[in-house]
Image (cartoon, rainbow, N blue to C red; front, side, top):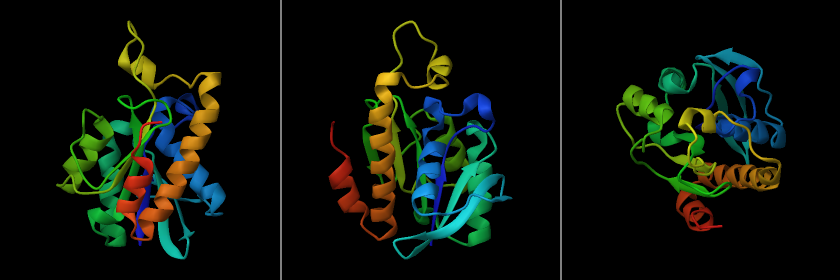
Amino acid sequence: MYILVGLGNPTAKYQATRHNIGWDAITRISDEYRIPMDNKRHKAICGKGHIDGQKVILAQPMTYMNLSGESVRELVDFYKVTPEEVIVIYDDISLEVGQLRIRKKGSAGGHNGIKSIISHLGTDEFPRIKVGVGDKPKDWDLADYVLSRFAKEENEVIRGALKDTMDACKMIVNGEIDAAMNQYNRKK
């Protein structure tokens, strides 16, 4: 079993912002595989279902980004999975809009949600899918940028990135993380 965690912030204020791309990916997966997100537990909105015959838990932490590790720790403990069975999906400003980067492990790279997860799990060895949201424009505050919405011309690229993220998750839960990395870790 895998737990797929999409990082973001709760409330309508943050909906569809760059920082909530992880939440958007979980919503896309939920819709595609008809996994209802109807359970509030472990400080998250969760859904149970299957992807390609593999049992999965989908989760959108309700803790706000900087405390995401609290929810992930509860999920790992309750479902008795290893960190290697948790796939974390989140935004990355160092990647072009829509570009994916899949990793088996790694540092937080300055991302506070990932810092929290590493702190609570005591390891950085969990798979992750970074979704590029683009670098902040000059003279913008970083917080303002990641909490902004995508420009109209970026929407089609983001829809494609969400589909690619869903397809990459399918590969990973089927034990094909290396193939997913080879397929999606390319420049657009």
